[in-house]
Amino acid sequence: MSMASLKKTYVLKLYVAGNTPNSSRALHTLKNILENEYQGVYTLKVIDVLKNPQLAEEDKILATPTLAKILPPPVRRIIGDLSDRERVLVGLDLLHEGLGL
Image (tube, rainbow, N blue to C red):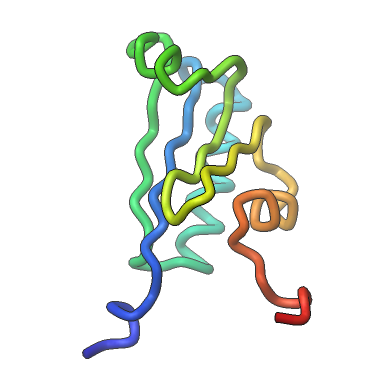
């Protein structure tokens, strides 16, 4: 059994409103974090709320860009362009180093 199969899989949704600079920056930053830290152990779904307003409504998304971590629980959300890497990792409960665990 490989190490990758022992890790958790993260399921993330990034809600954007069209191809705005903030949306592009959020997606670029997030992909960078995920490729460096979580290679192969995540699923990312990008949802354009202009094309799929019902999905934003169902998930109670009030602002974009919003990143939601769906799995593993608990669900966590971050609103903004995700430019603060540490805030993203802590906010999504992905950063455990330095917490004394």
